[in-house]
Image (cartoon, rainbow, N blue to C red; front, top):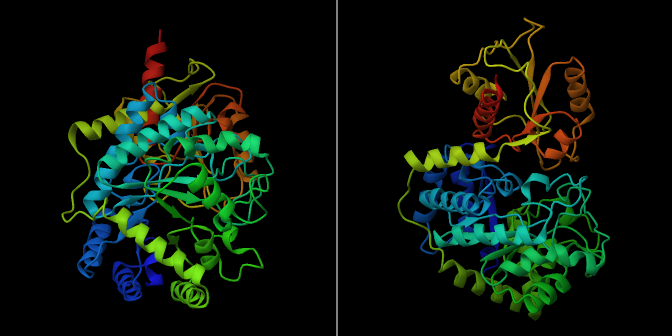
Amino acid sequence: MSAGRLFLEALRFDFDSVDDILRRAHAALGMDVGGFIFFGARADAAARVAEEILDATDRPLWLAADLERGAGQHLRGLTTFPPPGALSHHPEALDAVRFAARTTAREARGLGLNLALAPVLDLDVEPRNPIVGTRSFGPDPERVAMLGRAWIEACQDVGVAACAKHFPGHGRTTTDSHAELPQVGASRETLEADLEPFRAVAAEVACVMSAHVAYPGLASDAAATLEPAILVDLLRRDMGFQGLVLTDALNMSGARRQEERSAPEVAALAAGCDLLLYPPALAGAIGAVERAAEESEAVAARLSESVQRSERTLARFTNPPVPAGPIRGDAASTAAAISEACVTVFGGVPPSWLSPAGPVRVATIWDDREDAARAPFGELFRDALRQAGWNVLPPGPGHPEAPIILLVASTPQAWKGTASLTLTGQAALEGVMAGGRAFPIVFGHPRILAALDRPGLCAWATEPGMEPAAARRLDALVRRTEP
């Protein structure tokens, strides 16, 4: 039984050319990999690579991407949606979640993908958590379970496998598992709330992703990814989960910073993981598993079990043969309307000095680790306000008397290390707000806005649809309150 079948290799379109990616993909296929994960691709490039990969093999493969915020999150040119925290605030949240999941799956499947690494079922219960936040449907286990189940059902009805993450719950961490091994000191009794969403979907979700987090109250000081008491005893025996257990990315420090684990890929397989994602060195990882299987009947049995389980699950989600484009017409309008309805008002109506007659200035604070991947931050917002008839001044130092609409971007990102604004971002925010007539719109968690103790809007995320949505929401609010 080939150990390569356990691995999903990463294809980083944001780092490599399509030709380089195809060379790496063919090399990985030569190692008999189980599939690939797409990162940062244009939709047309992803379709080309998926088609060539599928043409190059006579067996089904897993083609996956992180699609928590729509297919456009990693397949640029397709549709993006507000993050789960925002969808949970939609006045018709269940319908919005189902539409988002259905559209995400349809677009991904149209390019050849059959695995959505979503939804997040972690609880948003720790304000200091640097990596969950708006990615969660919220702090209430019942609501997270309800919305998570709706997302999974809608996604899988279209023919794309869903993946509930990060088991047994990443919501209580105060550090980022990309950078270190977090430890959650909560008791088993407290952690029952975190487990509830996963229990609710265990019978239907195709995949569950493990957390690179330690839970002494459940098992030991080892990451859940490496802990059979969590993946076998709790997830499979207690919850009855029959699907695939996926690791989180194995290049993350949370999976590798344990000196006794020289080969975390082997330890993850032995602990109950079926698919091993994004190893830092594919050939070395495959070799480590093959050597372990030769030396241990138990590892060889786990290898055979996981490959067979993957093949059975793949049979339910075969790769589609014909690419399709992004949604159009009424569906695109619905996606835009969902984004606008998710923009949340805090602290009352906008102040009376904010008027379409203007002039107004639009200032921006980009407090994220990664640069904006699409249009410069604020450009889409300014365009949408101008289209709505606002007198928006061009960027620059002129008209210091004009009121400011301040856009603040601060979202959960790997290796960012903080859930709040950085010191630089906080200083910039305080400097602008101290000037008097400034109206904040936060593209991040509403806790950032709540700390300002003044009226503002929460637009939740920096996906392209959220800037026009925030502009339309602001325009509607201001015009509604004009004398």
